[in-house]
Amino acid sequence: MLVANLKKELELEVWERLDGVTDPELDEPITDMGFVEAVEVTDARKVRVAFRLPTYWCSPNFAFLMAFGIRREVMALPWVAEAEVLLNDHCFGDKVNEGVNSGRAFTEIFAEYCDGARLDEVVETFLAKAFDRRQETVLLGLQALGHEPAEITAMTLGALRRVAFSGEEELRQLPRYLDLLLAQGLASEPQDLAFPTWDGDEIAPHELRAHLTKLRSTRINMEFNGALCRGLAKMRYKEVEIGPDGPQLIDFIAGRVPPRDEGVTAT
Image (tube, rainbow, N blue to C red; front, side, top):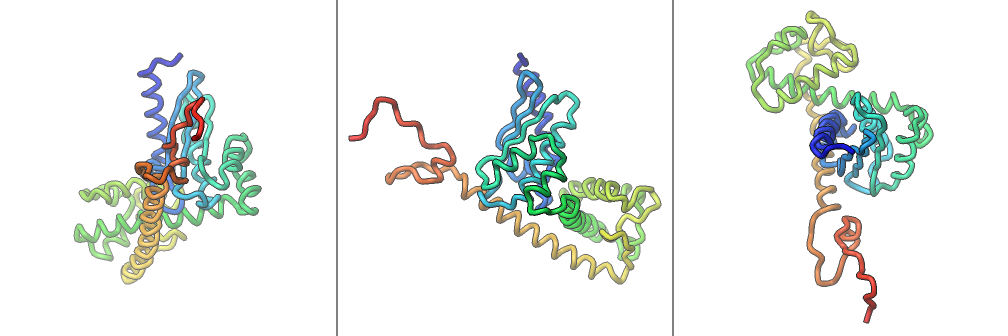
């Protein structure tokens, strides 16, 4: 039997790994979005993660990508023997849960349940949006520090790593931007340009303003969707007292309605 303190430490490790799972449309950690409901580590070193999305009808594509991400991050922990991912209260929940816990390849599952969609193409679309949002934050941070367009577009990866940012958002997004640059092979050596486009093209100094306008459009769309998701989640699972007219559907969904006492009959 796991000692309580050890169990708590292991569960904290899982939570830290889950910070690396993002909502694919918003590029925000599912932990920050409040999607993760529970993390449990059992005696057999099995991890169970339950999550819930803002609405019952959230895109199955998004649900699968997040479920895959949860399983991938949890299984990356060396002490984990088995992982179970549970999506609650979703119209596609049974298929997501069966698929992600089946042991089959994610690409096969995704194509079967998502109308033949290619997992790599869907991931590529969302990574491009995430790249734009992260890059914009870093570029605006450089402008705020007084860097001119010619300096920015010619900046190398090594030079970018030496910049002393102080803004909270720049400090948060810089490592995420660098991770994506490296993962996509867009820059890897210190002498490589730090700010290519997602397609790998160079940005000329006179093109920087138009490029930033494009990035701003992506960010505004993602921020709007993020605010909408947070609002829907709060409305769906808000804590409210049961009114004088009795419980509503939301009260049953949120588990606020106590079970009927045995032996009590209606009068």
